[in-house]
Length: 569
Ligand code: ATP
Ligand code: MG
Image (cartoon, rainbow, N blue to C red; front, side):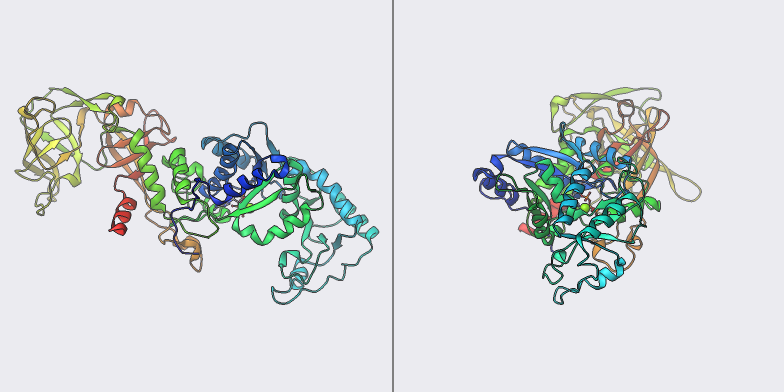
């Protein structure tokens, strides 16, 4: 499980194994040559990047082979479901560029048909009402090597089963007092065949069907039948459903014939290092305020990634790179970050911001003078044009870009050394001002007017180039820096409470970041920028007209590319 696999396997035609099976089925004329897939989220949480892997497959395969993909909410458990989740799920699928058209369905749409089928199965002696407790039922299940034992209610007369089931649904019995079970085989080597539960009693009103129903179907029964009612041909899901497949087929056989029968195909889940994918755990992080909501930029949820500044094309690129296989794997988060960096490199506007500012005074530059430099919006794509940036006698530069006693290979600013101020002049440091505690408060330098960028002969080489922001023009903004949500690589593999593995340093707020004025004027939520020399940053929706807030999406250093280079040496 902890084996790390990065590159997905595709065949010569560029198809992954699921797509190849679909292609084969279509070529064989199965289901009349029709392709219909579905994405079946339970509306009990927000979608995460693992779900994206699933729906990119569902919608993507339909697109590739001219089929259709339904969105079906698997709303069979009223105790955990909510409209909030339904809306967020639809928004996130749209965000990644997929659409279900008029094919929006709910498993609850099929409750009447499913109920009718159930009555038929009871009448055929294929289901019975069991009045044992869930503990007793569990005890009788046996183990994979020891057969289970029959329930004392297993041979109840059909009439009695029918009567009890109808009354279960009228609300005559308490939750947990009885269930409907399929009468299959308590000795089957597949544990899922040992008289699985088909319906349980739930009295919580359903958010769509209200109090119409008091019995709700279990996943294994509802899922395949819903696929059938909807005309789904390929029910693509994750590997944990492999042992459920025979049961899926068993139930579906009650409805299907040679002309149409849905089939289940499984692929490996997405697991990412330094995070968790369990909806239960993510919900816990939200409920206990261990993160700031489902869309906290540290979360692996799609809304969290969006807020952080990850783009749909980067996410799709990443999913495409890891691919679909039959082997469980743990994927490096650095590969996702690499994809984000590559995408933003192409599109993000370059601007100047100083995150840890110290004042630089250019003593030979006239007081009150102001020049405007034209800066490239994206040197990777000069068609993106330029924008103006003011230059004055007092500038903000990064505190880390100055050292009073530098080591040998420090090519930034230090006493008597020269650097270029990006897009402007070469300066030479002439001294510093310290406070009583001996801390540097200001740095002094002189500029060389002959070195103005763009002037003939201005290309005198110096080793370092620093970014800067004019002090009188700077706009103070907030920047939220993020680190890994968890301190360990694979939190799900660790013993004990997963919450104790959270990285306490995962959020750092910088209140005092100096941004160039053009960028401040052109920022609206979800806009991406590259802060020169620092990384990619995305405008947070918390921004107000008084204060802009940026999320650090990702730094510039590509740890993934570096590792790959090392590995290939
Ligand atoms: P649970 O069922 O425990 O609430 P879930 O994550 O399986 O959680 P669903 O809403 O049932 O949530 O998921 C919808 C679909 O997404 C399922 O078909 C499931 O197989 C798929 N899926 C869920 N997690 C992943 C993952 N990490 N990688 C790939 N697909 C996933
Ligand atoms: Mg599920």
